[in-house]
Every structure is written in C-alpha cells, then in structure tokens.
Image (cartoon, rainbow over all chains, first blue to last red; front, side):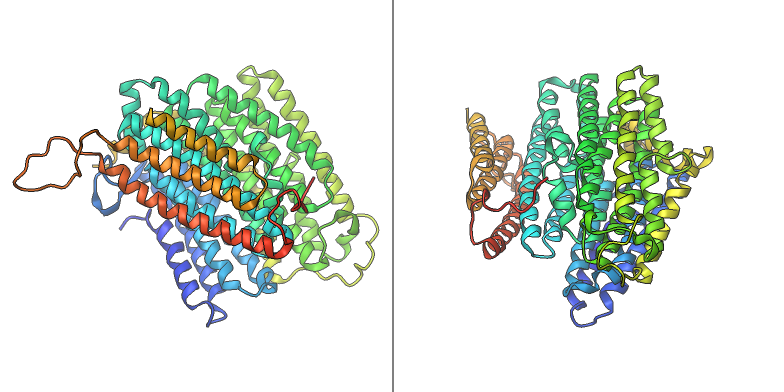
Length: 497
Length: 111
C-alpha cells in the first residue's frame, strides 16, 4: 500500500462523512476534521523519510503505467509542499474549533475546508497535467464558497470578484494545457517533458508560457493580477484567510508554476527575467499599499502580495541557491502569515472590530495574542534570529551572487518598509493606551491560543531548518528537483520499475 | 480557420467579462470563454473524415478521432457547470443584499 493516494483520499473521505453526518452529530465535524488533518500532518512527515530512502515514488492509479494512466508522484518538492500544507492545515483546524463556534453551519465549513485541502494535496501530488487542472478547480471552487461563507455584503462582493477572476485564470490554464497537448500528444508531465526535449520547444511553448504566467499569476496574485486578493482574503473567516493567504495562493499559483516551468517546459532565461520583474513589482507596490491600510486583515493581505513577490524573485533568479531561498521563504511565509491572520481573527473574536484605529493597548488584556503577533511581525519583516530573516537573506545573497545588484537592493529596502507597517500594526493594536470600550476584552479560548503558540514556535525555530542535515533533507531535496529540470522525467520513468 | 474562430469566441467572452457592468452578463462572458476552450480542445482531437474509436472485430479501422480530448472535455464541462452554478448562486445573493446587478453600485470594498 503506497502512502501517496492517502493524501487525497483521507480529506475527501472525511469531507464526505462530515457532510453526511455532521448535521446530526454536533461533535463529529470538529473531531473528524482534526483527526484528518493531524493524520495528514504525520503522514507528510513520514513521507520525508520515505523520499530520503527511495528518492522518488510513483503511484500508478489503476496500475496503468505512466504515459497512459494517471500517476501520482512523490519527490522532494512534493513532500516539502505536503509538509508545509498539512502541518499548517492542522493548526488551522485546531484554531477553528473555537473560532467557528460563532457561525451556525460548522459542518458546511469543515466540508468545504477538507475539500479544499484535498484539492491542494492533489495539485501537489499529481504527475498528470490535466489532473492538476481538475484538482486546482476543486480547491478553487471550495475557496470561492468559503470566501462567501459569512453571506454579508462585503463577503458576497469579494467572493463574486474572486470567483470571476479565478475562473478566468482556470480558463487560461486549460487553454495552455490544450496547446501543450496538441503539440506533445501526452498529458503526463514527465512524458511531456521528454517529448518537448525530443521535438524542440517550437513556437508553441512561446505561446503557452504567457498563458501560464497569466493563469497561475492570477491564482498567485502577482502584482498586475492582484486586485481580487485584498478583497477576498480579508472577507473570509479568519481560519480561511490564513488558509488562503498562507497556502492556497502558493499551491495553486507558485507550486504549479514552478513545477510546469522548471520540470516540464524548461523555459528560457527571458521568461525567468519576466518572473523576476513581476516579483520585484509586486514586492514593492504590495508593501507601499499595505502601509496605508487601517483594516488589519486588509493590511495582511497586501503584505501577502508583497511577500509573494520575494518568492517570485527567488524563482526568477533560478540559481539553485535562489530556488532554495524561495522555497524556504515559501515555508516561512506560510507559517507567519497564517499566524498573523489567526491573530487578527483572535482580535476580531474578542473585540469585534478589525479597524486598527479602534484598537490599542490590547497587550494588557490579550497577552498571548500580543506576544505571538509580535513574533510573527518581527519574523515577516526579517529580524535576525527569526525564520523570515534567514530566507530573505538567502534570496538577497543569491541575487547578489547572480549579479542582480539592483534587485538585491530593492529586496533589502522593501524589507525595511515591511518592518515599518508591521510596527504600525503593533503600535496601534497592542501598545499604547487602551482603546475605548475595550476594558472587558478577554483573551481568546484555549485551542486558539494553542494554535497561535505552535505557529509562533515554528517561526522562532524556523532558522534551525538551515542546519546542514535538516536543510539537505527538507529544502535542498526540493530545490534539487527543480534545478534538475528535465532530469525529473528520467527519475519518474526510472522509478516505475 | 476554425481554430481562429475559437480564439475570436474566447476574445468575445473576455470582452464580456472585462467590459460589461451587469453581473449576469459577466457570468455569460465566463460561460462563453469556457465553451471556446472546450470547442478548441475537441478540435485538437478531430480528424477530417475520422470515425469514433470503437473497436469492432470485423472491421479494419484506418482513421479515428482522438478520444482523449473528448473524455477530458466531459470532465471540464462538469467543472464548468459547478463553477457556473456557484457563481450564479453568489450573484443571486448579491442581488438580495444590494438590490442591483450593476457592479458600479456594488462597491463596499476599496483601498
């Protein structure tokens, strides 16, 4: 029995059970969702060991061998992403036990949540390009519904905008897949990469690359395509904001883009340069737009745009070191952005407002939220011992090494702007005098505190991932898959036997 | 030529999504985009004078259309249906709250 299909089967099965029995048995949705994400987290950690032992695993669905059938692939990059997604999803479900008690239909929330998780795991694990599209749509449809979960004015407006943009992006991606299929007559990513290598890229790749940049760029909210994100992410309930900002844009946007560009298409230097420019633009403008925000979740959403820019910059530089830095930053951003969104949820839960102007002095009443939020803020703005510093350092060093001095300088100065707006957030929300009507504010419930503390601990310990043994095992094995380029195909077909 | 017409259809849908103000018209634009991609995918697998790829014991089959795009398009159509149903449901809710389908009047979010 292989481990790979479990990542898709467990959340799908749990979503089914929750939707079937969740309405009658009140405790079941909480219990089942937490068990599900906890077991997924453990499985993903186990998969790291498996990859170290075997190198790469390929699971053949219905035992059809790869060029014909659909295959699921577990390699370094896959297990890196699986660990990131499933561990954070576990803390988010833990948090939602208390947070979602305010909403009436908890079982609907968990059903959609688990479907979204199944879709994301599917995108990560699949080795078939059309299957990637299908899983991408599963995750995306669930997320459209989750953004509209509160069915108030703002939620519906944001959800409509998001759904239209998301569908447009999916159409572009499907169009790209169609052109690739018409050129290579195969859908398996490894096989496609081989065919492209044998036939030469031709004009079709030049046409497909912009389609994919447009499609995945919309999903990842890189700068010219970011307009839906600052509406959609703040409108969702806090655990979903954390899930969307922390994981969804990375899995559907960044991961899919990396996998296809590096391992399948093997695109040219010019394309990487375009990615780099897009990254720098979204990094800078996202940070500037974040400064002016008063809604705490909106500020965090713009900050996501800015941080995605760092990851794109790392991918665009495309040296092995830059890729490792980008992946490391991806992991770190997933942890601290989820943490910060959970913090904002805790503030909203206790005070009932998201407006920074109405807050102040919350540290005295909510010490845990205040402390974890301080750690998250310092980590995202790159304070030395915390995880964000190391990943930004690697990206900037890689930029210098590749002789993109201007990019490195911009990346470093954007980091200072980031610090500025997070200090503003800290000052207005947690320090200073207590805001009006906040005297009776209580700290968030226990499970919410636990989730926040655990994520903050990961932020502090994130620097430890740089220790040579861990780094090789976790990040470098993922970066190697990407730098190998077409080598991916050889390994996939090599490990079938 | 017919491929080109597909692209024109796609562009019409894109125009609808980007330029129209009515929520329902935007949704129709999205549907047109979807159909254009589906049509293109079917065309990719089509061969002139080809027949359906069914194996019969007494016939020799020379020219068949590619069955794979057809199978994939079935999946894509179902996905398209789900997305459309969801978006229409959201649009109905928006109408309940705002009392209008005009996107210029549905603007609570900015900044």
